[in-house]
Image (cartoon, rainbow, N blue to C red; front, side, top):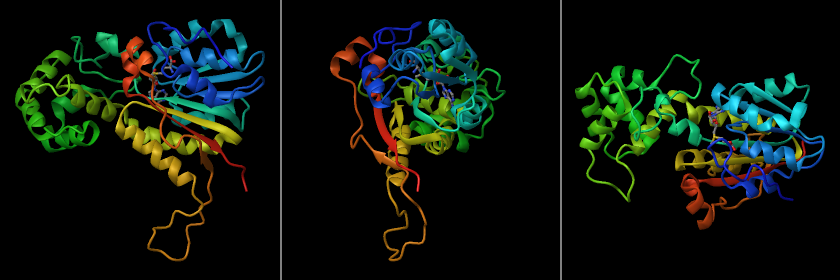
Length: 317
Ligand SMILES: C[S@@+](CC[C@H](N)C(=O)[O-])C[C@H]1O[C@@H](n2cnc3c(N)ncnc32)[C@H](O)[C@@H]1O
């Protein structure tokens, strides 16, 4: 199976691990599929091509701008596509609204798109000057400004440490609090850089702090945990759950979730008699995550940290 049109840059965003994703989804004509992070619709176009002539796709995204791009990109597929402004945490309700109580595969391609990163006014990037925003969904009130300018220093340090795995979190939080009020991404990046001990492996000193703020603003890790649970409940037996993560915090959540859901007993090891009544729901298909080859990374540097994990829904008891 192969699909061509999504593999190239769609509206400025190149879908990562494109062919691996399409293979992992095990697509077929007539299938019902959810792309929980439809973005610019690159993977989605491939899903629709590979499930021709009558496969259907429900595409969700928290960002209405992304949905507009996806709508344009996926227009040739007509009524085989439904696009909805919703978090993937709401995929069960969205699927039911389509009249689907089970689906054949679900894709989550986590994080943010190139369009979001490169749009200065969204405030995701330390390379362009923009407002302290970082929301996926511009209709939500809470933005990065709230954390940067109003959060108590200790809590801010905890956010930077937990979601950015930044060793200098305390010093950075202190510098941010002393520099308040901060108005723009470049002001913030300069304050962070003043506390950096030098570039680590060519990574900009603000990378980890910006990641931390974005994760906190969008409550990304809780969304991921909830989304994985919901996805398993929606898959048909044999259905595929395909997740691409871009940093170790996300990947750890996916790995642990897959491991737990592939076991019949999740009692602590010291407990001799099982009392959890847990039954395995998934079979793991990727013992180790699939990583992009070097030629993909040289064409699309954003792909370098991508890790793809795949699991299959077991038959229900
Ligand atoms: C990496 S991009 C997806 C790109 C897409 N696979 C493509 O080929 O164009 C991730 C997208 O997920 C969206 N997103 C992030 N968290 C979300 C959530 N909880 N629910 C729905 N969409 C989300 C972002 O707005 C972004 O558009």
